[in-house]
Amino acid sequence: MAGTQFFGERIKRNEDPRLLTGQALFTDDVNLPDMLHAAFYRSPYAHGRILSIDVSMAKEREGVVAVYTAEDLGDYWQPGPLLVSPPPVKDIVFNQRTQVPLAKDKVRFVGEPIVMVVAESRYIAEDAAEEIFVDIEPLDAVIDLAAALEPDSALVHDELGSNISAHVVQCKGSYEAAKAQADHLINRTFEYDHGIAAAMENRGVVADWDRRAQRLTMWDTTQAPVFIRNGMAALLGLSENQVRVIAPFIGGGFGPKIMMFYQEEVLVPWASMQLDRPIKWIEDRSENFVATTHERSQTHTVEAAFSRDGRLLGVHDVFLHDQGAYAPYGLTVPLNSQCTLLGPYDIEHYYSEFTAVFTNKTIVTAYRGAGRQHGVFVIERLLDIAARELGLDKAEIRRRNFIPPEKFPYNNEIIYQDFAPLKYDSGNYEPVLDKALQMIGYEEFYQTVQPQAPAEGRHVGLGLVAYVEGSGIGPYEAARVQVTSSGRVSVATGIGTQGQGHFT
Image (cartoon, rainbow, N blue to C red):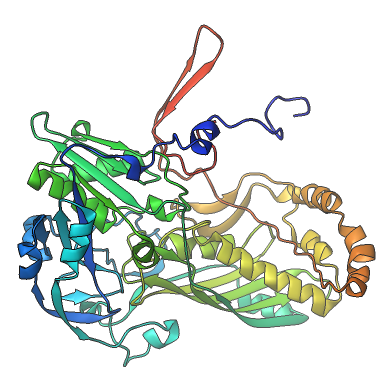
């Protein structure tokens, strides 16, 4: 690709002048005539039974237009859709539970919305929300993953009889056979911490129902405007051409802004149709901390079998995954961890078992890798530990375990999230590694930089990770590409900008 105009070159981004001069449109910039504002009363408890809700004072406040509880939603109150079905794995248990618009009977995480207030201003709506009285009987919170599976644990969803969201076993070969041949075994427990996103702009929705035209327009901080349009049309009983979703600049996506459907995302358009006025809701920072989906927590108990020359014979991994209170994305995150752990390595024997656990935490969905980094973390730590214990260079142990070019296409045999066996069509990893080591000055680092660092008061190391990511799995949408008479190319697509230069 030498000499190309764009690949590997620094180019000016089309969107930067608007962003740098404050001319870019964000959802909070949308202000419409006669617009109302929404605020929410959210659960202060991680787990509890709702005994009563008193909204009488909030309704009496001047400027309050409407107050809605779950009972007021009627048939519109229903669990959200399951966005990704579980794969056709033989050994699988799956318990579907998805979020509801407003909590009814029970709250399951701090920040879960219970009451929606619509008023002439956000200030009035917030003040009215503080005048709502919800009597909640606190219940033991399910927080620890291992404790959540004990018989005497409190239950996030009582009707399930346990806190198991899913249990999946996938394997290839025979790990016990690999273990019997091994010269060296490594046993470890790896903890991958809980985490949240903190975008420059929080979530927000503006909805405007035009009764005359019978058309709904939404401005939404979403990464998936086409799918929000289709889904909202179905939920509201409209045709898709009656709903327009505009995803302006969203101040960073990272994954949580592809979640469908957030409670506020469902409620604000519905309320606009009820009141025949535009409504805006913009998430504040404290709401973002508890109401935007979370990610990460996993505990892996893993054993790896190695030959004395550093060949990875097999891996046995059992892990727990935190789903939070609901699981709208099904098994996407833990399944990605299970599949991505194999990486670019020729692993003949693999046993993987995970239990996805419901807890009284904010909903967990895809975020910056969607579980793939968890699997990478486990296998790469194992290789680093093995290299140290077997006296091998960390680059060399990876080189010895790469899938060789002659083995492609390579079938990992286990099922991926596209419902098909995880197959790598091609690859030649060793030259890529060698080029990377050259570019970062790998040998010089260990020969010169690291030995000199202590004398300079520094302690430095060098991390090395190899990674194969499954991509192009959809869903898909159409695009229109037009070559104009000037020679310029115009591309129109419904994809939402997420901060990575999509306009450019």
